[in-house]
Image (cartoon, rainbow, N blue to C red; front, top):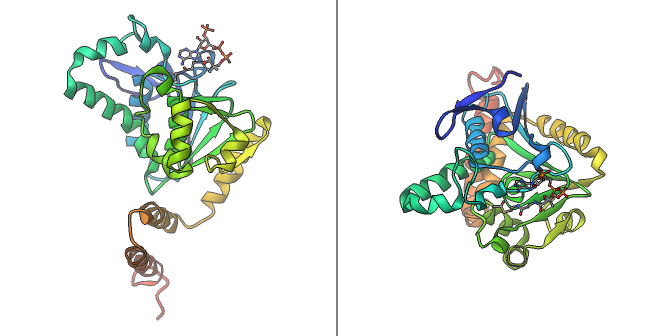
Length: 275
Ligand code: ACO
């Protein structure tokens, strides 16, 4: 697929320059973190590019796979951010102190946009994780609906050990998946969670041998695509809203979504209406 250009913070940069590959094959989009020599470290440009991909995702896409090239899914934020020189064209943590509160908040919000779209109800996002998923890498995996792990996967919320908080949308899914106590323990010790434990505590849907990761993701994707597209979207919307509703509210929401489904399937103009 042709390289995609987008407006970066200061200039037009290509996906290749930020270390991403993006391919669309029918209903499947695959985003590959592609800086294996730097263990797929991420920068603000990575997150702008992810947001840009989300904004322009073709309507036919139903499954978005995020994977990493090389031995690690992602070693997290580019450690040059911690140096005075920073990342060329993107500054450093030290230089961001001078930005002012509003500008800084805006920068964080723009970074988070790269992660938030992965929860859209009309798609299912799948993280395929091998090796290390540290900090921003762990949060990117958490931003996806589903996680398939190779059994060498090592998840680590390193931010608190570096004096930071996880701010790339990872805290809410982590708490929802493992519960508050376990989330506190994982984050505040910044320890490594291995693949088997990840599966046991709800951080992974599937653990496979490293050589089988791509095939496992392909099988999962095929199963996801086998269901009715609009029913899948409506069902994901229902499931996402469930924890914020009472049982009665959720039941009412189910009824509304079903009415829309029945109308679409059997109503006038559907081609299936009797008579
Ligand atoms: N940022 C920039 N470069 C990195 C990063 C990173 N986060 N992680 C690894 N690299 C680079 C290394 O500097 C090295 O580069 P070089 O070959 O030019 O010297 C190369 O990637 C390979 O790294 P190794 O450490 O040699 O690879 P190894 O497989 O032995 O270890 C591991 C991988 C465990 C991921 C290790 O690189 C590591 O601990 N990285 C830092 C993780 C980290 O603290 N990330 C920040 C988390 S906080 C956040 O994301 C907000």
